[in-house]
Amino acid sequence: MSTKAESDVNAAIQQYAEAMASTAGAVLENPKFQGGPCSDPTGRDSDTVYSVQGVFNLPPPASGTHLAVIDRIRTDWKANGYTITDDRTVGADNAVLAAETPDGYKLDIENASPDGFAVIINSPCYGRP
Image (cartoon, rainbow, N blue to C red; front, top):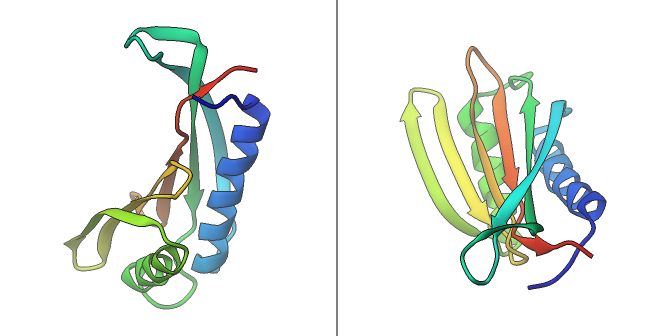
C-alpha cells in the first residue's frame, strides 16, 4: 500500500472535482472533505491507513438538461480511461454516473434535490507517511 499525505489526497480529490465542474460548465459549491480509517492489510481498521471522501455540489445547468451534463462527463471520463461502474437514468432528467480512475479514485455524480448535482469522490486507502 502506498503512503500519501492527507493534504495531497485532498488536492487530488479537488482536481477530480474541478475537472467535473469544468466539463459541466459550472463552479463547485459547498466543498467538504472527510478522512476516515480504512482496513489495513489484515482487515482491521487502522489509524495509520485512511481514505478521504470529498463531497461537492454543482448548480443546475444554465442551459440544457441534467442528462446533457451527465453525457459530457461520461464522454470525458471514457476519454480519460476511467472505468464506468454505474450509469443509470432514473427519471425524465435524472441520472447517476460513477467511475473509477486508473489511480483508484471513485467518482460519482448524480442529481441533487431540488436541483443541481451532488459530486462524491472517494480516495483509495493510503498509509500515513
